[in-house]
Image (cartoon, rainbow, N blue to C red; front, side, top):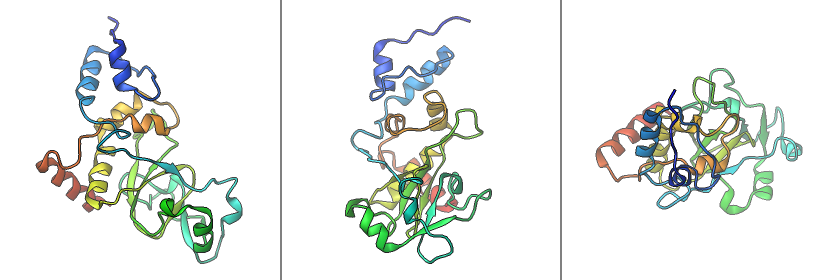
Length: 212
C-alpha cells in the first residue's frame, strides 16, 4: 500500500514525552489522530495528572496480610472498565493494615480514604480492550500492577474514566504500546478539557456514575 508520511511536528505532538513513533497504518488513521491531538494531554494543563503505582508486590510483600482485617489490596486483575470487582477475579487476596499504610505512604499519597481512579498498567494492544479504568471508592489500596490517580473533584473523575474507557482513547493507546501502559504513554493521551462542553460533559459524568 501507499506509505503514510508523518512529519516531525506530528511525532512531537503525538508523543511529546516518549518521542515514540506511533503506528499509523493509513491516511485515515493519520487524520483521526490529528483530530484528537487538538485536545490537552493528561500530563499538561488543565489536567496535569500525577499518577503513581500502588504497593510493590515483591518489596512490600511483608505488609500484606491474609485472613486478617485491614484495607483490601486490589490488583490489576481485580478491575476492569467501570468495576473494581471484575467477574473473573472479584475478590482480593490481601489486606494492608491502616497502621502500615500511614507508615509507608506519604500523607499526600494516602488514597485509601478517598475516591480515586485506578487503571491496569499491564495491558496488551491485542486484547479486546486495552485501557481499563474505574473509580475506586474509599476503603481500598492497590498493588503495582495498577496506577493510582487522585483528583479532588468526583465529577471530573467520572468524566475522565468515561473518556479513558472510550473506544477512541483505546484506539490511540493501542498505537503506542504493546504490553504496558506506562506513565509516559498515559500522560501523552489527549482528553478534552473537563466542563468545556457542558452537554457532553454532563452526559459522560452521568453515564460513568451509573456504570461504576
